[in-house]
Amino acid sequence: MAYKLVISNLVEFTVRFSVKDGAKDRTFAFKMRCQRTDVEAFRRSMQESSETLGDLLRGFLASPALGLQMVEWVGEPLLADEAGNPAPAGTEAFAHLLTLDGMLQHVFAAVADANSAKGKLGN
Image 1 (spheres, rainbow, N blue to C red):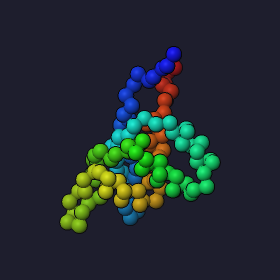
Image 2: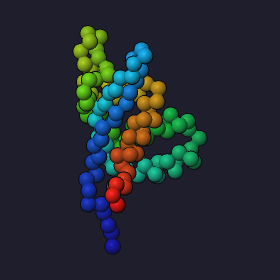
Image 3: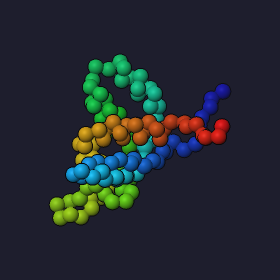
């Protein structure tokens, strides 16, 4: 007998982070969407690969099967164009965000968390 999940294959989640602006921490967030995926299988493949961690994570996040998309900013955008106008959420903005130290790993952790089952307090 074959089984299937009775939940959507589409996963939507918010990525929240902070960065230093001088001496002050500033918090930003954006919404993302992807296809439900087996993150554990990816983690296992990382142990067998000779690629760098950064290359593996970039490949995973860019994979068509995952279909990862930056959907919208939540609150104030971190990026602006040369005229100071807020940059629209999307592929170009997401690629620029990934240039921040630690962002690649943070987004991977957010994807993994969004794809994972969680315990509920009070069980």
